[in-house]
Length: 226
Image (cartoon, rainbow, N blue to C red; front, side):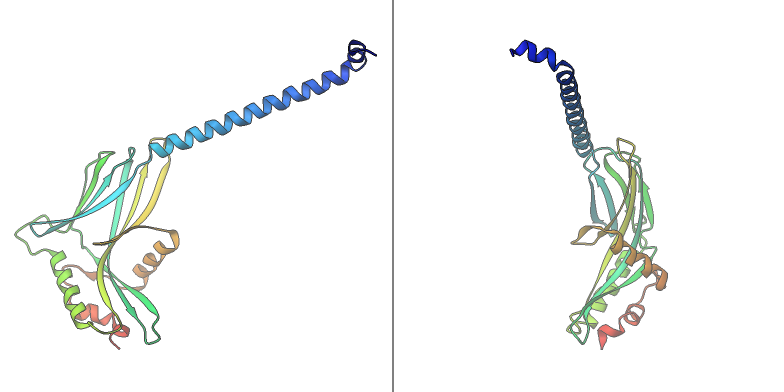
Protein backbone atom coordinates (compact mmCIF):
# COMPACT_ATOMS: atom_id res chain seq x y z
CA UNK A 1 0.00 0.00 0.00
CA UNK A 2 1.53 3.29 -1.09
CA UNK A 3 1.46 6.54 0.86
CA UNK A 4 -1.51 7.98 -1.04
CA UNK A 5 -3.67 4.95 -0.37
CA UNK A 6 -2.62 4.98 3.29
CA UNK A 7 -3.51 8.66 3.51
CA UNK A 8 -6.98 8.16 1.97
CA UNK A 9 -7.67 5.24 4.28
CA UNK A 10 -6.74 7.16 7.43
CA UNK A 11 -7.73 10.63 6.28
CA UNK A 12 -10.18 11.26 9.12
CA UNK A 13 -7.73 10.13 11.83
CA UNK A 14 -4.95 12.19 10.30
CA UNK A 15 -7.28 15.19 10.10
CA UNK A 16 -8.18 14.82 13.78
CA UNK A 17 -4.54 14.56 14.82
CA UNK A 18 -3.66 17.60 12.70
CA UNK A 19 -6.45 19.59 14.32
CA UNK A 20 -5.21 18.63 17.79
CA UNK A 21 -1.62 19.57 16.89
CA UNK A 22 -2.72 22.92 15.49
CA UNK A 23 -4.87 23.60 18.57
CA UNK A 24 -2.00 22.69 20.92
CA UNK A 25 0.37 24.90 18.95
CA UNK A 26 -2.07 27.81 19.12
CA UNK A 27 -2.48 27.25 22.88
CA UNK A 28 1.28 27.17 23.36
CA UNK A 29 1.69 30.41 21.41
CA UNK A 30 -1.13 31.99 23.42
CA UNK A 31 0.47 30.96 26.73
CA UNK A 32 3.88 32.23 25.66
CA UNK A 33 2.34 35.52 24.52
CA UNK A 34 0.53 35.91 27.86
CA UNK A 35 3.73 35.13 29.78
CA UNK A 36 5.66 37.67 27.71
CA UNK A 37 2.94 40.29 28.23
CA UNK A 38 2.92 39.67 31.99
CA UNK A 39 6.71 39.86 32.11
CA UNK A 40 6.68 43.07 30.09
CA UNK A 41 4.06 44.56 32.43
CA UNK A 42 6.07 43.53 35.49
CA UNK A 43 9.23 45.10 34.06
CA UNK A 44 7.38 48.30 33.11
CA UNK A 45 5.87 48.57 36.60
CA UNK A 46 9.26 48.01 38.20
CA UNK A 47 10.84 50.68 36.02
CA UNK A 48 8.15 53.19 36.99
CA UNK A 49 7.80 52.27 40.67
CA UNK A 50 8.30 55.09 43.20
CA UNK A 51 11.48 54.80 45.30
CA UNK A 52 11.14 56.58 48.63
CA UNK A 53 14.08 57.92 50.63
CA UNK A 54 14.29 59.91 53.85
CA UNK A 55 16.64 62.68 54.88
CA UNK A 56 17.06 64.25 58.32
CA UNK A 57 18.51 67.75 58.41
CA UNK A 58 19.23 70.28 61.12
CA UNK A 59 19.65 73.90 60.10
CA UNK A 60 19.81 76.81 62.54
CA UNK A 61 18.38 74.67 65.30
CA UNK A 62 15.40 73.46 63.26
CA UNK A 63 15.25 69.73 62.56
CA UNK A 64 13.43 68.51 59.47
CA UNK A 65 12.50 65.12 58.06
CA UNK A 66 12.30 65.15 54.28
CA UNK A 67 10.58 62.47 52.18
CA UNK A 68 12.05 62.22 48.69
CA UNK A 69 10.95 60.14 45.70
CA UNK A 70 13.77 59.16 43.34
CA UNK A 71 11.69 56.72 41.27
CA UNK A 72 8.49 56.83 39.24
CA UNK A 73 5.63 59.21 40.08
CA UNK A 74 3.83 58.87 43.43
CA UNK A 75 0.35 60.41 43.29
CA UNK A 76 -1.83 61.39 46.26
CA UNK A 77 1.11 61.01 48.64
CA UNK A 78 0.30 60.99 52.38
CA UNK A 79 2.54 60.55 55.42
CA UNK A 80 1.91 60.17 59.13
CA UNK A 81 4.89 60.21 61.49
CA UNK A 82 5.08 59.10 65.13
CA UNK A 83 8.19 59.70 67.23
CA UNK A 84 9.53 57.43 70.00
CA UNK A 85 12.41 57.21 72.41
CA UNK A 86 13.70 53.65 72.04
CA UNK A 87 15.44 52.12 75.05
CA UNK A 88 17.76 49.17 74.38
CA UNK A 89 19.10 47.16 77.31
CA UNK A 90 19.99 43.71 78.68
CA UNK A 91 18.14 42.03 81.54
CA UNK A 92 19.83 40.24 84.46
CA UNK A 93 19.61 37.07 82.36
CA UNK A 94 21.46 38.84 79.49
CA UNK A 95 18.33 38.91 77.34
CA UNK A 96 18.41 41.88 74.96
CA UNK A 97 15.23 43.93 75.10
CA UNK A 98 13.75 47.13 73.78
CA UNK A 99 11.21 49.52 75.24
CA UNK A 100 9.41 52.26 73.36
CA UNK A 101 8.26 55.58 74.80
CA UNK A 102 5.90 57.47 72.45
CA UNK A 103 6.55 61.21 72.12
CA UNK A 104 3.69 63.54 71.26
CA UNK A 105 4.12 66.62 69.08
CA UNK A 106 7.77 66.24 68.13
CA UNK A 107 7.23 67.59 64.62
CA UNK A 108 5.53 70.97 64.66
CA UNK A 109 4.34 71.27 61.07
CA UNK A 110 3.94 69.14 57.96
CA UNK A 111 4.58 70.75 54.56
CA UNK A 112 3.64 68.74 51.43
CA UNK A 113 4.92 69.90 48.04
CA UNK A 114 2.15 68.12 46.06
CA UNK A 115 4.82 67.05 43.54
CA UNK A 116 4.93 63.42 42.42
CA UNK A 117 8.73 63.19 42.24
CA UNK A 118 11.76 64.55 44.10
CA UNK A 119 10.82 66.29 47.37
CA UNK A 120 7.34 65.12 48.42
CA UNK A 121 7.06 66.33 51.99
CA UNK A 122 8.95 68.03 54.83
CA UNK A 123 8.17 67.85 58.54
CA UNK A 124 9.65 70.47 60.87
CA UNK A 125 10.14 70.46 64.64
CA UNK A 126 9.85 74.24 64.71
CA UNK A 127 9.60 77.05 62.18
CA UNK A 128 10.27 79.89 64.61
CA UNK A 129 14.02 80.34 64.93
CA UNK A 130 13.71 82.57 68.00
CA UNK A 131 11.70 79.97 69.94
CA UNK A 132 13.49 77.19 71.89
CA UNK A 133 13.19 74.08 69.77
CA UNK A 134 11.48 70.97 71.12
CA UNK A 135 13.90 68.59 69.38
CA UNK A 136 16.74 70.16 71.39
CA UNK A 137 14.77 69.57 74.60
CA UNK A 138 14.11 65.92 73.76
CA UNK A 139 17.72 65.29 72.74
CA UNK A 140 19.05 66.94 75.89
CA UNK A 141 16.89 64.59 77.95
CA UNK A 142 18.20 61.59 75.97
CA UNK A 143 21.81 62.69 76.50
CA UNK A 144 21.27 63.09 80.24
CA UNK A 145 19.48 59.74 80.39
CA UNK A 146 22.37 57.98 78.64
CA UNK A 147 24.80 59.53 81.11
CA UNK A 148 22.67 58.27 83.99
CA UNK A 149 22.51 54.67 82.71
CA UNK A 150 26.10 54.57 81.46
CA UNK A 151 27.58 51.16 82.34
CA UNK A 152 24.23 49.74 83.43
CA UNK A 153 22.51 46.89 81.56
CA UNK A 154 24.35 47.81 78.34
CA UNK A 155 21.57 50.35 77.99
CA UNK A 156 21.17 53.17 75.52
CA UNK A 157 18.35 55.52 74.51
CA UNK A 158 17.82 56.91 71.02
CA UNK A 159 15.24 58.90 69.10
CA UNK A 160 13.40 57.14 66.26
CA UNK A 161 10.54 57.99 63.91
CA UNK A 162 7.97 55.62 62.39
CA UNK A 163 6.53 56.90 59.10
CA UNK A 164 3.36 55.47 57.56
CA UNK A 165 3.14 56.21 53.83
CA UNK A 166 0.44 55.83 51.21
CA UNK A 167 0.50 56.77 47.53
CA UNK A 168 -0.81 55.70 44.12
CA UNK A 169 1.60 54.67 41.38
CA UNK A 170 1.46 55.36 37.63
CA UNK A 171 -0.78 52.31 37.05
CA UNK A 172 -3.38 53.24 39.67
CA UNK A 173 -2.20 50.74 42.28
CA UNK A 174 -2.36 52.00 45.88
CA UNK A 175 0.69 51.30 48.06
CA UNK A 176 0.95 51.49 51.85
CA UNK A 177 4.14 50.97 53.81
CA UNK A 178 5.86 51.87 57.07
CA UNK A 179 9.47 52.84 57.74
CA UNK A 180 11.64 53.22 60.80
CA UNK A 181 13.90 56.27 60.62
CA UNK A 182 16.70 57.28 62.98
CA UNK A 183 20.00 59.07 62.71
CA UNK A 184 21.72 55.95 61.35
CA UNK A 185 18.88 53.64 60.37
CA UNK A 186 16.43 53.50 57.49
CA UNK A 187 14.40 50.32 57.17
CA UNK A 188 11.00 49.18 56.00
CA UNK A 189 8.81 47.60 58.67
CA UNK A 190 6.85 44.43 58.12
CA UNK A 191 3.28 44.12 59.41
CA UNK A 192 4.32 42.41 62.67
CA UNK A 193 6.97 45.01 63.50
CA UNK A 194 4.57 47.87 62.76
CA UNK A 195 1.94 46.34 65.05
CA UNK A 196 4.40 46.51 67.96
CA UNK A 197 4.43 50.29 67.61
CA UNK A 198 0.62 50.37 67.44
CA UNK A 199 0.39 48.38 70.68
CA UNK A 200 2.88 50.72 72.33
CA UNK A 201 0.65 53.69 71.51
CA UNK A 202 -2.32 51.91 73.12
CA UNK A 203 -0.48 50.70 76.23
CA UNK A 204 1.63 53.73 77.15
CA UNK A 205 0.90 57.39 77.74
CA UNK A 206 2.66 59.73 75.34
CA UNK A 207 5.21 62.18 76.71
CA UNK A 208 4.81 65.73 75.48
CA UNK A 209 7.82 66.86 73.43
CA UNK A 210 7.53 70.40 74.83
CA UNK A 211 7.54 69.36 78.46
CA UNK A 212 9.49 66.10 78.58
CA UNK A 213 11.73 65.62 81.62
CA UNK A 214 14.51 63.23 82.57
CA UNK A 215 12.41 61.85 85.43
CA UNK A 216 9.66 60.86 82.98
CA UNK A 217 12.09 58.82 80.91
CA UNK A 218 13.71 57.30 84.00
CA UNK A 219 10.26 56.21 85.20
CA UNK A 220 9.97 54.13 82.02
CA UNK A 221 13.38 52.50 82.54
CA UNK A 222 13.20 50.82 85.95
CA UNK A 223 14.41 47.46 84.64
CA UNK A 224 17.41 49.11 82.95
CA UNK A 225 18.57 50.71 86.19
CA UNK A 226 18.47 47.56 88.35
